[in-house]
Length: 364
Ligand code: F6R
Image (cartoon, rainbow, N blue to C red):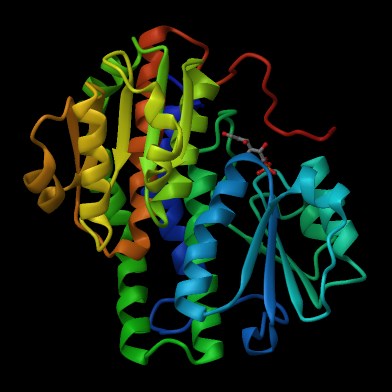
């Protein structure tokens, strides 16, 4: 049942305020001020290193979480694609917490990577949407993301719920390791509780995003740029666009632009820049100017302050509410998803069942 939406993907994008709210309430029970995990939980003060493994969109959730675990908890993090990890057979030290992220919980490569870690890591934890799945069952601890059934092949609400759960885990890690002040922790918890409202405000920018997407739908190639924790989101934005609209798209760390991809820039080339007005904003703006100087068409996704400062010469802008930089990747996922969705609708592709793709990849 699409609940009045044209596609499951649109329905699932619209459900995000509600399901993220559920995920947050689940791990941050009302009235309390601490992240609560089920079962034996995790004691991060005993973890020496975190290894995160996943595929596709779930892999990008892990890449984002690396910034959070490093910054908040000062924990060394490795992130790997499951199909590479499992055959490389990397050394896994006994102090390692191995974390697997999977919407379906049935992805063959992720499951094989988990099994490889079983007699090596200190603890096997999974972040899953399907609690009865193989990956959940074979973990020491399974953390559900509470996204509800996801039908659209392109993952949307599962991604933002994965991110929300991973951010709460990083806050727990910081508390366990004594790397965050009680005040900062309380502020970030308040930010997490405010996420559903912020996501609603992002969804309200739908018309603006659709207008930008209609322009993007005519392009042959699109580049996505982001810095810091927005870099993995640039990768996710590009993946979403190619999956459902079949437009060739690449995500790059903004700082990598001049190391190659800038050669592609000409007047046919839209560049989506995801840049909240944070500490790295000025650097991203100078990358944007390099694009515009070569006649590249910039779609700037930023907040009020960022757009006021840098909109001159852009092709389109999308205004997000202001948010603490730590939570920006979760919020900015919404315009990334809607850009891909509206570009696909404009092209008339099969949004919920893109060609050649399966919802759950249970064979390699
Ligand atoms: C992209 C997408 C895929 C999955 C990947 C992993 O929109 O849906 O990239 O994220 O196949 O699937 P799970 O999370 O089920 O392991």
